[in-house]
Length: 242
Ligand code: ADP
Ligand code: MG
Image (cartoon, rainbow, N blue to C red):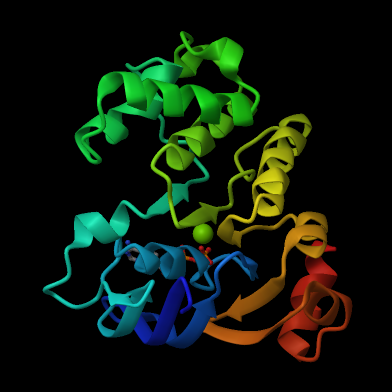
């Protein structure tokens, strides 16, 4: 069973038809990178996967459960999906450890000591075990993004969504975040990543999806889509970013 299955997804904002009949699946353990021009609907697609945006038409299944069904227990479905945003979205008034425990205790009802143990192990995983008492404002952007990843991992997600996780970072901080993501991919995490980091997509993705104007124009292995694109729109985009 795929981790995510999307059927005929259509999303409009007012009269702007942003997603135009997207069909798409992500299999267990797969790393899928979504690339495409600004405004093509990449973020909206990601946000429909956990119903941060509600589509007008189509279905989204997460591990076989239709989350677009009005009767779906959305909180339970959502708690399986970790999301990492361009703007880290950490809680500024909580220290690093508390950022990684709060949803565990409130949403998953874990006991404080268990939540803390899990948070510590994920902060170790992203190389920030020595920063647990720091507040977000005391950290670099790269460190903050790694906390955001540890926070998402602490919920034991089935799937991790990343929306341009390195786009807000100074260039010298991009590498440390990509290193953490690469490690996650090697650990077998199922990942859907919107990114402009073509070298990362080429190296880490099992599949690359190129979107333009609300449709999937082409998809395939990185060698196919980035190395040997078939569609004119893909070629034009890659000429601009490579
Ligand atoms: P991308 O992530 O590929 O840059 P987005 O999914 O953010 O693209 O946006 C696709 C289109 O939808 C853009 O034209 C954008 O202006 C529009 N859009 C996105 N979110 C909203 C919103 N909340 N309200 C109105 N328009 C939106
Ligand atoms: Mg976007």
